[in-house]
Image (cartoon, rainbow, N blue to C red):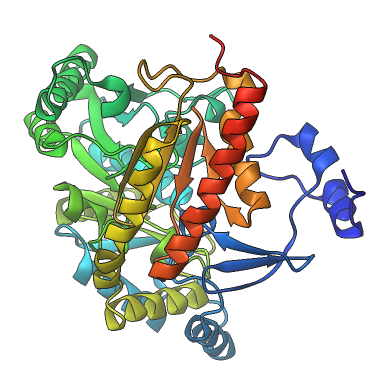
Amino acid sequence: MPPLSNLAVRDIETVLHPYTNLDTHRTTGPIVFERGKGVFLYDSNGKEYIEGLAGLWCTSLGYGNEELVEAAADQMRRLPFSHMFAGKSHDPGIALAEKLKEIAPCEISKVFFVSSGSEANDTQVKLAWYFNNALGRPNKKKIISRLRGYHGVTVASASLTGLPYNHIDFDLPISNILHADCPHPYRGMEAGETEEDFATRMADSLDALIQREGPDTVAAFIAEPVMGAGGVIIPPKTYYEKVKAVLDKYDVLFIDDEVICGFGRLGTMFGAQTMGMQPDTVSVAKALSSAYQPIGAVMVPERMYQAMIDESKKLGTFGHGYTYSGHPVAAAVALKTLEIYERENIVGKVNAISPTFQSRLKALGEHPLVGEARGLGLIGALELVADKDTRRAFDAKAGVGAKVAAFAEAEGLIVRALGGDIIALCPPLVISEDEIGELFDRLGRALDKAEALVSAQNLRAA
C-alpha cells in the first residue's frame, strides 16, 4: 500500500467518519474528493469516478449545476439567515411550502421544515405522539416500522430503522417502536406463493402484530415506497393496498418516507405514486435540493394540523423546531431544484432512460456472483450469493460485497455495499445512456475480479 498523503493523515487525526470501520480507516485513509461535474467525481490525485449512488441517494442533478449555485449565492446576498420561530418567516420558505403542498402525493395542509431525513422522521414520531395526546388518546403511541427499513440515525429515527448496526451498542430501539416483517420477495416468498399471496401474508402479519399490541396503542406505520439502504427491496404487487386496509381498520397513521424515493427516482414525482401508496403524512429530504443544501420537510394533513392547533393553544406554544428549520438559503436552492425538475421534465427523462438502466442491471443477474438483480426506475441492487440455486449467502466475514465495492472503486465507479452483500446503485437522474453503459461496464469488470478472488480463496465453501 502506498504511503498516505498529507491530506489523508490530517483526516485520520481529526475527522470521525460516519458508517466507517474506524480501525481500518486509520490504515487505509480516505478518498479525498476535490471536484465534481455531472455524474463524475475527481479525487485529489485527479482520478475520475462515476458517482453510482448519487452521493448518498441524493445528488439527483449531479455536480456543478450553476443554477443551484447561483440560487444559493443570490439568497445569501439578500437574506443569509432568518429563523421561523415565534411566527417569523421569509419568502423562500413560504414559496417552498406552497410548492410542496401543490405537488404532494396526498392531501396535505402544512409543511414543517427540517435539515435532514433523520430529523424529518424523528419529527414524524413526535407529531404522532403529539397528535394522539391532542385527541385524548395517551396510550396510542406505538410506531411500527419494518425490519430492514431505513429511516435515519437520530435516537427516534434510528429506532425506526430496522438494521442491526443502527441498534447494537447504541441501546436502541427506544420503547414504543416495533418492527413488522420485511416484504422482501427474494428472501421471504415461500415455494408456490405468488406475489399477491406474499403481500396478503405480510398484511396479515401486520394485522396480527397490531392486534397483539392492542389497536388502541398503535399510532402509526412508516414505510419507504422502495426500501433503500436496507437493500433496494421492492415490495410485492398489491402490498401497499393490503397494508392500507389494515391501517384504516385500526385508525393508524400511514407515514410515507420519501427521503430516497421522492422527486423522480422511481419514474414519478413521488414513490408513493409508483407504488400505489395512500399515505397520511410524508417525509422528504435528499433530492429536495439535489443535496446542494441540507433541507427536508414533513407534510401533514389538515386533521393533524387542527389537533396541533388545539394542543398548542392549550400549552401556549408548539414546542418543536430546529434553528435551521426552513433556512432561507436551503429553501431557495430547493425551490430552484423543483423548478429544474419541472422545466427539464426530469420524471420524463427517468422514464426514458430507466429501461436501459434496468436492462443492464438485469443482465448482471446472470453473473456467477449474483443471486438477484432488482430495481425500479433509476435505483437498483445486486444481491450476491454463494449459491445461486439455494440462494445461500456468503459468510459475512468474507466481506464479498465490500470486495466488489473496492474493485468498482478501482475501476472508477462509486457503489455502496449494503448488509447482506448487496451492491446498491442509484445514479444522478441526469445520467445519460452512454454514461449508464460505462457505469455497468465498470461494474461488470469489478464483479469479474471479485469472482476470480472468490474462486481463488474458496469463499463459497459452506
